[in-house]
Length: 181
Image 1 (tube, rainbow, N blue to C red):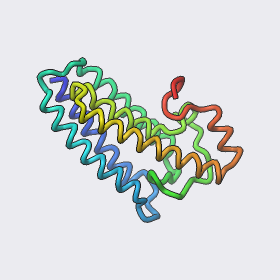
Image 2 (image 1 turned 120 degrees about the horizontal axis):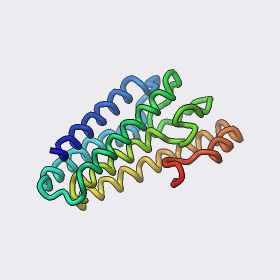
Image 3 (image 1 turned 30 degrees about the vertical axis):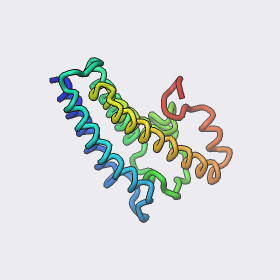
Image 4 (image 1 turned 90 degrees about the vertical axis):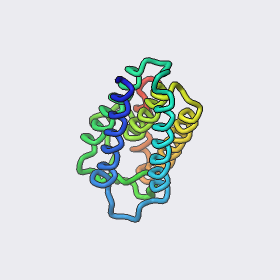
């Protein structure tokens, strides 16, 4: 039963991500190709992970409660980012459009990329649900690399546009996980 709960939470998280893509992020531009590729990779990766989770449903090596805890952390981080960025007009991943202000309230006081951090947690939550299946590990690695790449692109654009203001913000916050990275 805990595996089913973990799967349900992950699918709810996907729904929240779809909502944010449609309603929270600014849509005044053509969707960046990278954002489209991330969406397609998310659909494919989730399908693969679901297939691998059902193949391992009786032999989940790590307590599925760990997966549930990681999924809940992803949800909380995601909604903390939504609350901190309401009415800010953030753009989708891989956009060349950057905001003209730095969001430094709420969760952004601690980490620079809480949306990406929540997505990374989402992918990590699949690992215990699949008994660390090699396919799930590869999917998680690819998706984490994609979010790290997207964050790097945003950081370069923000540093170019906002200069020292962004550098000062980046120096006092963590990228994804306070105290770690």
